[in-house]
Image (cartoon, rainbow, N blue to C red):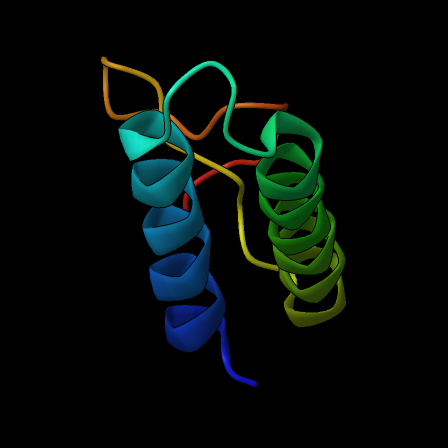
Length: 66
């Protein structure tokens, strides 16, 4: 799965978790969100992609813009 697909699946899992009521399988949805978060972090590290830019446009976590 490429990074865009992982980001999409992560967002879909977040939306699904938000749409669920408090009694609707909260652990399953949290596990799915966490699963995609870990996969995204691992793939970003493998690709050398910065996690997120900060508001000033600089890259967060000490990575300089290319």
